[in-house]
Image (cartoon, rainbow, N blue to C red):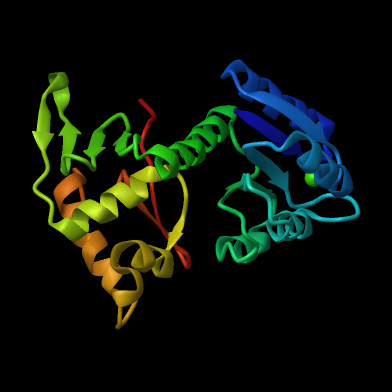
Length: 236
Ligand code: CA
């Protein structure tokens, strides 16, 4: 798997490269927007890590241009943002980014996010990856079984409705990613949905009752105020 890192701060670019190469990915670095477009054409990466704040052509513009170029191999794009107000622009993902990460982040977090994106690419291609795991949960979409790991290696099968199952697997497919209510509705109901997007809150509440030790202080399904929800757990 090849990854293009677009970041003008050389120290950060170097740290990202180090973390990814340690995991066996091959990387290239571009230090500005134009170089990124050039490298994209030459290198045809599977995934691009794209900082928004770049000199000249910024990350959002680079993302738009890459998406406009009709290539056979469409890369996954993970945006890096530094400021709160940028998140609103990225989260709609109308720029064509697949995911985003807010600085500062740990190398571990970055690697987890990259893996989640590439897992999705595998799933699209081969239907092989329908299993999501974290330290406390396993969701097996093929067998339609969700389990929670209890103490002393005991496993408990969760009694979830079809919707709750879909909700949990969607959230777990991207640990740490914030989903807006609209995005969750798209995943859960597709185009068939008519109604208030607050219905998502109801299902989240029910799911929390089934998986959280204390549903009023959730450990796994976190609310991101003003935006939506995310799943958090240690990676296996
Ligand atoms: Ca930058």
